[in-house]
Length: 354
Ligand SMILES: [Fe+2]
Image (tube, rainbow, N blue to C red; front, side, top):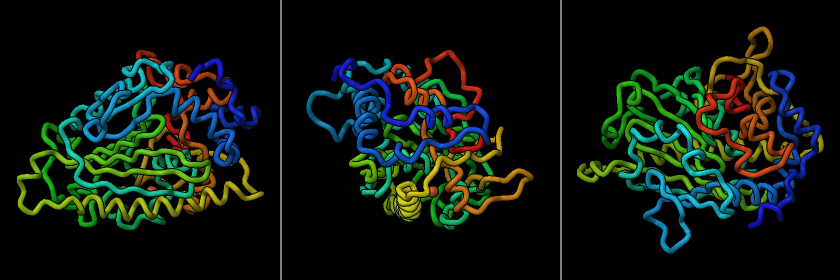
């Protein structure tokens, strides 16, 4: 791909993007519906994001043949354009946050594939907030406090943060009990929390005390996305006579399907004539990166119902800097901040009221 051959300006209304880029919560709005519906937008995203950046191809041991240009903690990444940031800058400080789990030594014990009738950004945004959790994830809410967690400062092409486990819970499962073995080398805090990171553009990494889950996405059409969900465990579990990864995979399969139904509902709403750019939640200063977090609050503190939260939170995949690309054009080199610049002052994931 030649960068010069790619239209530098996203085919999205420029004023709508400017509105989405406003730095003041309450004044800013979500991305416009066409960003989730247009074939032209998806073609632009493929050129700039999926071919112009480091895209995860899966686990390195599952791939064969030439063309894989970088392996990171067992995952294989490729930059089809040759113009992407150096890989170290792409992942930035996510490397030090993921490294304690030693994902390179883990093995895939379970894998599910899904085709979701929703835009890839809709799915990613859903991953990065959990206003919806109290109303659609009863099992998840039993093992994780819905008001825990914060977003972490970042200097790579990722967003995310932590959430806590309930006092009784060892991990994310229906019972809170684990069926494997703790991942070696984690500190006390890491053994009591779950970490959710979205590495732009297509890999979601969820770090648990005893396993790692990933969602890897490939957009099929603007309204349809292939998702591969994998569960990775440490090799020590093979020494357990009764090891069965389903305590993790079945829990998350149920949760995944609850999310897919929600995402598909949001996607149908985006395609309606009444779809408009909506405001982000006003609560600011506290993070709530993924599952189990706060519902949005109205001024004065009243909680909105989840359905209203769905309307409030549209447009949250991209950081403010990344969304700026949609306005000014450019490729991966312009969507990521370089290491050493520190965290953005604003929210890392605009879908989340920090
Ligand atoms: Fe969810």
